[in-house]
Image 1 (cartoon, one colour):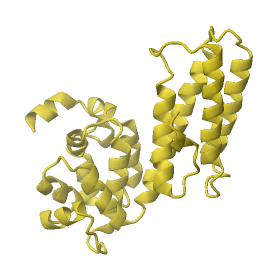
Image 2 (cartoon, rainbow, N blue to C red):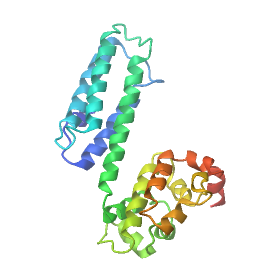
Image 3 (tube, rainbow, N blue to C red):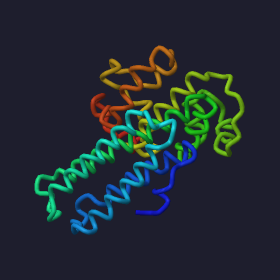
Image 4 (tube, rainbow, N blue to C red):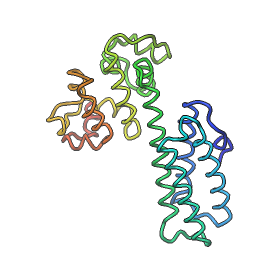
Length: 243
C-alpha cells in the first residue's frame, strides 16, 4: 500500500483523494486478484488499519457516521481474518467486508464532493472541469450562462455567481452524482432524457421551471444514475449516437 495513504490528510481535497486511492487499493485485493497468503494478508491488514485510522482521526470526520462505519468494518475484517488462519476465506466474509469498505469510501468521496460544491462559485468550476470534454456552448446552456463564462470557469476564473445561483449549485450536485456512472457526454445527455418518473419530462425542464422546488426529485433521479434512462424509455446508446 502506498506510504502516502498512511499520512493524515490535512485538507478536504486531500481526504477525498485519499478515500479514492484507498478504495482503489482495496479493490486491487478483490478477485480476480490472486488470493493472498496468511503473512501477506496480515501485512495488508496492518497497513489498511493505519490508513483508515489516518482518515478517522481528522477532527471534522472523527464523529462522522462514515468514519465510524469504516472503523467498525475494520474490526469485522480483523475477526474474519482471525477465524481463517489458512487465508482461504471459504465463506467470502473477508471479501464482503472489503467490498463494503469500498462502498463507504466511495460514499465519503461523494460527500466531500457535495461539500465542495455547496456554493455556486464552486459548483460552476466543478461542472466546467468535470465536463471539460463537452463543448462550451452545451455546458453554458446547462448552467444558464454564456460560453465566455464557462471558458473562464475552466481556467479557474470564477467570480461571484449572481445569475441563477440555485440552478448552478443544483447542476453541480447532479453532475457530482452522475459522474461515477457516466461519461461526461452521457452526463449531458441525461439532462435531456425524458424520464418516466417525471411523467415524460426531462431533468432540464424541471431545472428551467424551478431548481429549488425540483431539487428533491432531480437528486433522486441522479442517484439512480444511468438506469434512469432505461426507466424513461430512452436508450443511452441511441442518445449518444444521435448527439
